[in-house]
Image 1 (cartoon, rainbow, N blue to C red):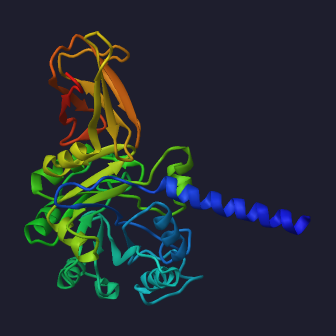
Image 2: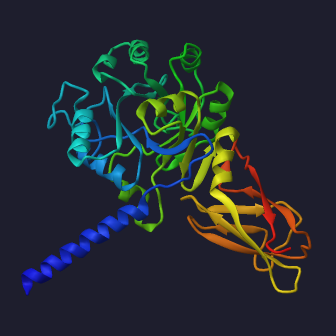
Image 3: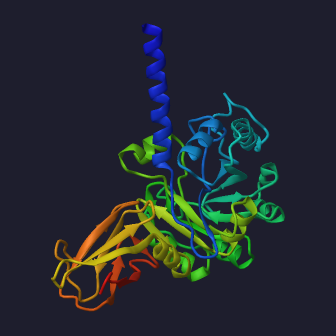
Length: 371
């Protein structure tokens, strides 16, 4: 009896773990012409200042349903070197890719490194590297040139980090302007871990940088993001032509990205609006009896919980002007005083920004069944 009970318990636990992994997977719909891929371009393990072996980073990424993860250990900062000495800065990436191969996983893993300097330039990630060791240099500019020679995508990390910006405000320096002008710096983190900076978003717009959201995970995703309590890791949604590392790099260079941070979607209009339009749809509209009240069903095909504020003249029987549409769920709005067979509803999307303090508007066409 004891042995049989143990088998049942283990089986139930394994099935529960599989179900939990499926439920937490990040899912956003594709948009016309592109696949919507979830990527995390800033992670750490014990091979720099992280707290876990690289295998754990891979397992977390798979549970979160990521399409691509970058291994980005600090080049210069090695606090575990007495216990884990490793002159090869590619070693973490090699272990991570080996784990993926053993699991026969389709997770994409790319090599990267964090150039770790005082301000300026501060901390900068280079991803899609062939050899991280080539970036080890006493000269910061030489590290950037080495990344460029490898065709890396390079971005400014946590530009409002209080250890380097005590006031918590991201600001450009002459060195950053020179790097951008020279084509050596391509993106900026507007969301890092648990922090978002509107000033970094403005810098992205002013200097045409790619908008990024990253976990910068050091501990465990479950601890830092309360995944089982409804939280999610900070990621970048990349609009790519196909699910390959090369396609992700092309999309990053073309700035087709949306940061997803604490349920907030952050991006340029040309990237964000197609995602909103495919995520939020009218899935039904039915006249309620002989009344002039139309039951309109709004459906959400994404992981984001949408907070909408009506900006049209319509009123709703069971809701105020602010409506919440749950992730992969729906809400029914009783639109009052509507006699037309077709009309538009317009909402301000409060959990999305297309510029600092600027929420996009979404217009939804409603066709009433049988009218």
